[in-house]
Amino acid sequence: MNKIAEIKSDDVAQPASGRSPYFSEEHELLRAQVRRFVETEIKPKALAWEEQGYVPREVLRRMGSLGFFGIRYPARYGGSEMDTLATVVLAEELGRSTFSGVATTALVHSEMASIHIFRSGSEAQKDKWMPGIISGEVITAVAVTEPDAGSDVKGIRTFARRDGDSYVIDGTKMFITNGVYANLYCVAAKTDRSGSPSRSITMFLIEKGTPGFTVGRALDKHGWRSSDTAELHFDGCRIPVENRLGDEGRGFYAIMKNFQNERTTIGATAMGEAQAALDLTLDYVRTRKAFGAPLWQRETIRQRLAMLAAKVEAGRQLVYHAAWLDAQGAEATKEVSMVKAYCGELVNEVMYACVQFHGGMGFMRESTIERMARDARVQNIGGGATEVMLEEVAKRL
Image (cartoon, rainbow, N blue to C red; front, side):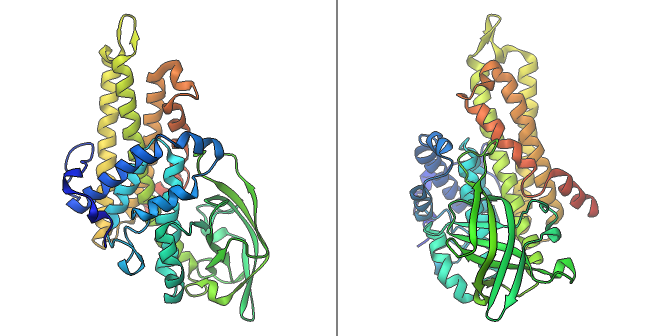
């Protein structure tokens, strides 16, 4: 049964600006369910997860049981068979939680890592792994980035050498979300050092505990404190040929294709974060008094917040439109690149202003907006830096 459809229609939540023509009732049922989970299961508890540095596995299993990890996957594996707009709903509402480390833990698993298995995996691989991925029993990570290769995927150095019925992998991966506690890793490696870079990368499935594969260290981050991030080492890591994801040499194209989903997801999360920050700040300036009156009575504050609200609405609609194009099967690389560039920059513009309007309290670790500002900083870096995204847009102008 579709878990999303189990919600009553009178529970439907509306987006910040009212009913959107992009979304069906099923999308809004999903929105209501995620929003309720955020209010009851994330906001009251996630400060402790920030301190411990990861989201508890039982929380992720609960998200899986509610259907959050299978919204676009087939019913045969336990999914709901929804579309790209459903991913946007999930990401936007998790972004509104104010705990972006929790959001990225869930979204990397459901929208950025496991998608490699679903799109490139064999039927046997999907039958083995997808039910556990969707239920939250198996948490995934995607390992592409290296110390000297981020958006430049062709520059990776991790190498997989074919040896009979096995591959032997050597190399290092860096900044890997879910890297410490994941169960299953989708790892990019070169399989041909002398061939064309775009035809020399292959994706592999590597389980936690495989000999030769170690978590080098958990990384201490500026933000996303509740998301575990790691450096990974592969030293003579031997895996069977059956662990290859797709054909040899086709990994670059799989990564590029899946970047589209990742960037749409990040844009939606960023707009959820920006809206939550504006909501917090509006509440604050309406009650915080300075010079005998609430800050809201200052024209410059009202107008600046109004303009930021307009920009966030524009960003939200850009995300929705790009997701709609993708859901229709249309080419949307330009629009998705615009989403990643615009929303990644905008969420930081919003956070800067909101910290400013909180005054000294905005600089205190005890304030929500201080944490949100730290979390937002990576949104114009991860998944394709703004400068890289603008080049993608420029190519298509």
